[in-house]
Length: 422
Image 1 (spheres, helix red, strand yellow):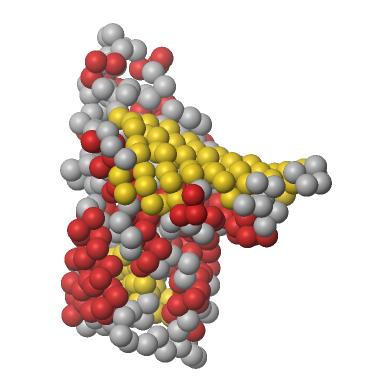
Image 2: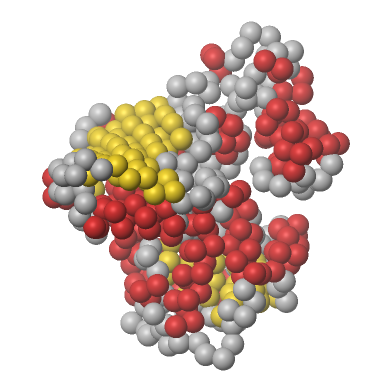
């Protein structure tokens, strides 16, 4: 196992592999803190993506593939923000090359590949963090402080909802890169391993058994409205459809400019370019005629260590907002919504609400402060050589992934599944 010597006298040198939306988001902190970190290289096969990284934070060296970075180590750390199925090979090679690594979640689409990645990183002995950004939110800090304070007494149960948002689901999981398990990963892993990880983090427990139910209820060909067409631009009933691509993207472009999610649809910055992308690309296809197969709703029932029970629900058909959580204890209970935490103490009868004043529940808004806090913690760990700054290392992240894989086995077989120990 290698050690993590501190870096003194200069900023941490960072390379980026995968300059998509998530990768560019992490560059925002680097750009704002040039005294602490510097982007020295970017690797992406798309010229426009490399140009975006260069514009975001500057990158003197550009590659169309990650492999040159593994052949010669030119940075202290690397952020791997490629698509779900493209993490294992670069992470293992870059770990062997000696880079500290910040890897986007999920680590891999299968249990075998996930274990292979984790074992390889451990063997290399490099500093490693996973982008479980919810662990780093100020809101999470508050919830964990309340739980750890003992005011709730003995923890009994957790009830947690992930409201994905009707338009967000249509964008990313019907028309977007995560629409198919074959090309990305199951919805529970792609989107909700965050939530399984968060539940274990704030409670300090481990998910030991899980049952799961869910499926693709709505976005199916038989639910297409009468008179609808293959594409929104050709559809006679588009104006009355909540999932109209014109409704989802054109107002954003007009009101906010070329920002996410428009930037996922087209590189163009004008209405004519957006219309062309909707006419030709996947984001203009009718949501009922897409080839998506990931679930649009899923519910889990879990038994955790210490006898604590937990429920989790991933739901597409909601507003796009913060997660909603209730934690029940023998002496009190907690209700949280991402912006405030209300706690009732049964012993005194007092109810206290803690207001954070934060906003931003999704990737476009920095995940409620989680995105910049994650990058700050990773850079601090690299700079100081102290892995304790990282809250989402191999062991913690492996646990949430194993729980997601067990839940999928449970959903497909109608059984209760044990979650393997780490």
